[in-house]
Amino acid sequence: MQEAVPIGEGAMAAILGAGKAQVVELCQEASQGEILAAANLNSPSQIVISGAAAAVNRALALAKSKGIRRAMLLPVSAPFHCGLMQSAQQRLSQDLERIVFRDLEFPLINNADAMELRAGSSIPDSLARQVCAPVRWTETVERLVECGVRLFVELGPGKVLSGLVRQIDKNLETAHVEDSKSLAETLEILSRHA
Image (cartoon, rainbow, N blue to C red; front, side, top):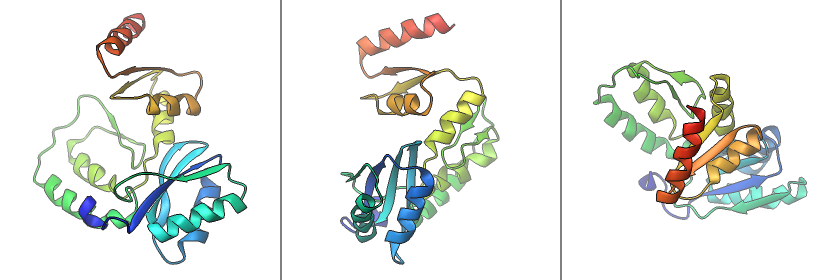
């Protein structure tokens, strides 16, 4: 993915306090023929944009004039989840075509479509498309709720995803595991849900 766009030519920025329609409009206005798109639909009021660095910077300047509460450049190494990643998507697709995926025992909700997948044959295309497609986190959480999920467990350092889950639906419960203490706390929470 890093090879797809030389350092400095792409960027990402967080847009806070604006809905999807407003962010899409912002991207269209700021793109001026360059690639710029909503890349991470994190919550109803937090969307990350991605694309050519100049277009991202134009969007940051325009955001204030459009009454957007906060817009900030993100310290990332590449403009992920946008059309600039096309070469990375093609390379990943070629690699995934060589792997045989069995049908899944548990469904996978992919972030590119926020749809449930079970057929192993659908996994390679789904994984490859996620490289350029926006991360539909809000829709993914909503789809999991439709499937009956009420407890979300985040693995890894921090609680960013847990916070986003609560922004999407305050009635959902979250837990996280990043060390032995948080693992014990999460196991206790899980035992109450068994």
